[in-house]
Image (cartoon, rainbow, N blue to C red; front, side, top):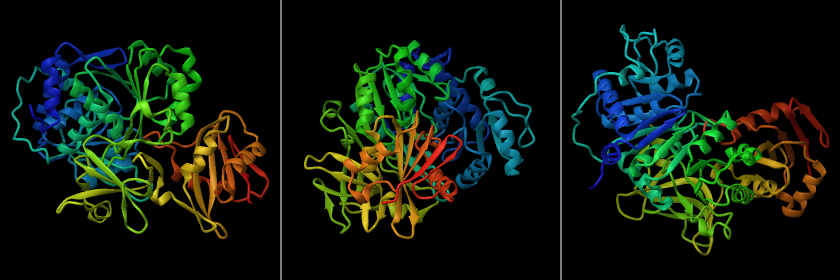
Length: 536
């Protein structure tokens, strides 16, 4: 059966596996049949609130059954799902509501109250996760809990569906300027989920443990792929309680664990307490793994296949490295995922498919339609492809292709540092520092400097203080002079954004304030942070 709409995967899973567990949240389990019924009820209620085809529905909820129900209900109505991280400040949500031109918000009751006050939007239509005394548009609305308890909706007539219809609007983090809304069609998301599920070889027997924010496409696709194959999704709201989260993973015998590198630093010190023998696949994306991370994963999960992957919201996934190649190519993020092509374009505009460095370009059905209400930024990213009338995605990432066509991520194009007239890729310096014993996480950033151009600052997360002399000596051994950090910033916890990545913009804003009185050759201490100058 051909599929041109995501909701067909949910219908199929409910038909084939009605009594099989679809979702687990804490001690609460929901079967595929029960999930489908909740989705029908929710979709019917949203239709009563005048949600129609193409309307944008903002969902400001944490990971959980409610989040998944809302995603599928919005798909049923052929509306556009707009996920918002639960930690997003109300003022930012107000901006998102306006930019997306959304008339309806689904949120936790307390957050919605704060939002309505902050946005001065008394007419905003709000559906709460739980019963609330708050009213909007002059009338009380049912909560998601109350909707679930309504008499079952048997059928829900829908219009004809097209795979070119918008399915999701996912806003990027907006580290510089306002966030950009990535427009993803049904075809984009069907193609991406089908491609990733195929190379991961996901099956109905799998139990996927998702602690990745589902407002982030990496987390959201766990729910989509689970429906595609009829697997079980074990949902954890976040990783703020790592001991509890890992206990749930073991208790429910998870077979697939999606991670980001920052989670690895939390799991590693706790791993000996748990039996992870049920895990058979570990996946990573968001930020590329360093070789030392891969060595650690192999030691923690020797029985599991490790999938090193790389992607961005604008096309979900770019590459994957077959586990069989991992030991020989730890620096690589692999080949193009199935049903896509990639190449790099050098500084002279010449395309290369091997033995070259340049900006990564992606071609395929996963490539976004564009940025919502932002034709200028869309034109920068989507440019003419090799065939007449088509567009390809210029990712803004600088990568290297080797002679075998394996891809190596180097840096965001905007992150390339120019120091003393030389170009420096932060990831290369980070890769060296990650090999230093005691380093948990590292981010290399550049700060404007009147002499160097970009001053290289290494921001290091470590459990215990590092010997600065040993660190300098290590860099002298493994890095050319112009690539060595000028300064080091140590912290027990580097700032992270909502997607679990190290927040480089926060570091850039933080460092000048803390270093304003720092003298060369001396250390300055601020709370649990230390900064060391190391000018050459």
